[in-house]
Image (cartoon, rainbow, N blue to C red):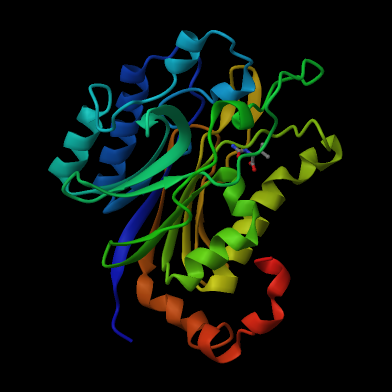
Length: 304
Ligand code: CDV
């Protein structure tokens, strides 16, 4: 087996408060990027909605107030410095942000991630498919989860990209709980799946699961990695943000499903691991050799 090795980093972010400007937050991302580079990383994964607070927790009626959380171009004036710093260091990255675009004469809003290569070029884009939460204000909740109101359903499916010397897929937060996400990426040959998340400790619909949030976070990602023989690099926004507690647990998971590196705290933290993309074959040539062992003819309900 020839090695295809790189050092990857999950760049966990502590909370981003509503009053924090983009400049301050992007400065934190650049500091994490520099630390990851100093420690040998050539690929850095930032969280979901990494440039702002997780604003779907608030009911916002004023369109202009809401618009302030979206980017109309990335790189743009607020993010150019991050792109320049990464290109100068030769570091590729994944970044999650709220995207506002005009498509066919309509304003569309997506929960988006991009893959940026080591020269600073955007080489991949993903728009969140599984949008959790609700569309209307539900005042009984201690905080809202209005992703269904503020974002359109992602319209790009689950693409994969040639990058990092292999095949890379992306997803965002709630997507990781769905085996279908990893399976589609796995069927398309993803060897590494990058993802960012914002996961509240408290789940108002089933508070008895609050104690299980960290467990479920790792359970679904470890299962996705193992069942598809791919690496997972997962980055949280963590800590007490705008009065809401977000879990941490950013990590790197091997194709065997083992967590090989994990965040220790709930603040800004770089989580590093050595990755050999060839190790995907340990799983894909054996127990989950799709061509030999999968039985799609018996999986009809999955696509009905
Ligand atoms: N940002 C998210 O997608 N959060 C969800 C919460 C609401 C359950 C998650 O799956 O972590």
